[in-house]
Every structure is written in structure tokens, then in C-alpha cells.
Amino acid sequence: AQSVSQHNHHVILSEAASLELGCNYSYGGTVNLFWYVQYPGQHLQLLLKYFSGDPLVKGIKGFEAEFIKSKFSFNLRKPSVQWSDTAEYFCAVSQQTGANNLFFGTGTRLTVIP
Amino acid sequence: DVKVTQSSRYLVKRTGEKVFLECVQDMDHENMFWYRQDPGLGLRLIYFSYDVKMKEKGDIPEGYSVSREKKERFSLILESASTNQTSMYLCASSSQGSNTEAFFGQGTRLTVV
Image 1 (cartoon, each protein chain N blue to C red):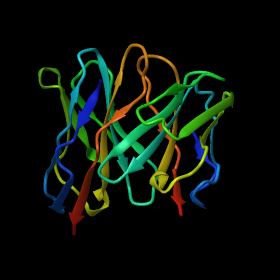
Image 2: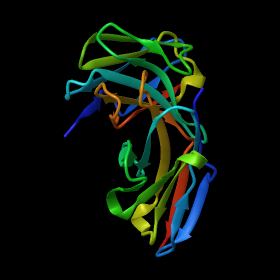
Image 3: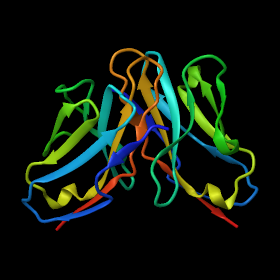
Image 4: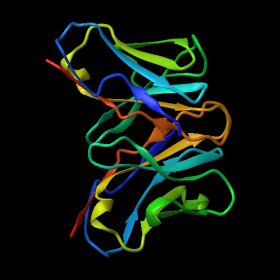
């Protein structure tokens, strides 16, 4: 069965600090990879996605993620966080063949202190 | 813009009640999903559907059923609500194909008392 691990449960940063959130998955086949964000009181929104091609993916609001196939990882990064980045971040994986339902990690809560 | 609409933002139900959560999408997506979101557990898939009248169990289907009579609508049914079903329920939809993303509704926070 597929699984997605997010090792950081709660991250607290000051504004302008750099961010890296870890995500590892277990699946031997070809996958699609996603980061979703949930701002307080709002619905899940797609931050960025990787289907194929350049393993460095740029998303909205200055976020990026790097797919490292050999490490089964898809870590999320941002060079300088803002207070408005306070949210919960979810990594997700789906298979490219067959059933394409999403498997989610447990989420990482990011708190940015002004 | 894709819109996934869940009929209620908040619901309070009594133990033993039959509960219906409704979800409608307006982008002609073939796939629809129901997840529940709990602190520290992320999102867990309850049921999904690839087509009208088709349904597949996800990771935690016990205590739930679903109905998809029309392409745009996917209903989650709690046959007899229990307190451990208090949770945030999220509906999502996506098109078929290998490279697709899912779009989510705003969620229904269900409290069973």
C-alpha cells in the first residue's frame, strides 16, 4: 500500500526565515506528487504539483518543491516565509496508472511569527 | 474555475441519526472522492467513485456508504451516526487521466453528540 510521511508535525518560524518541509512516499511505480495548503478556515488549495519533467517545481506564493526519485522525496521549500504563510501543509501522492486517488500525509502545521 | 460545493459547513447530529452529506461539482469530472480530516491523521479516503453508480471503498469505509446517481453529485451517508464520526469531511473531484489534480470543497464539520 502507498504511504506518505511528513516528518514535521509543527514548525514555528520567524518571518524571513527559510522553510523546508519534508515529504517521503513509498510506492514503486510512477507517481504524481502534490503539495496542498489549508489556510485557517479555508478549503484545501493546490500549492504545486509534479507530473513529469523538471524535478524542480515552482508553485504559487514563492513555494517550490524538488522531486528526488532516488530518495522517494518531494520536499517543499520557500526561501523567506511571511506571516501569511501560517497554514497547514499536506503532501499527497497519486499513481499515474490505474486508480488515481490521492494518498495524503498527516500534514505539517506551520506557524510564522511576525 | 472548478467549483466543488458541499451543502453544509457545519452540522450537529445525534447519535444514531442517519446523516447525508452532499457534494456537487460543476466541471463534469468523472472522479469524486470523500475524505475525512482529523488532527494528526491528515486526510483519509472513505469512498470514491469513477463514474455514475460506481463506487469503491477507500481506506476507512466502515460506517459509511455513498451514492452517485448523477455525474455531478456524490453523497456520503452515515447510516447510524456515532461520536467517533465527529470530524471534518472533505469532498473532492478530478478528471480521469494519468496527470490530473483534485479540487476540494470547503468541508463539512460534523459533530455527533
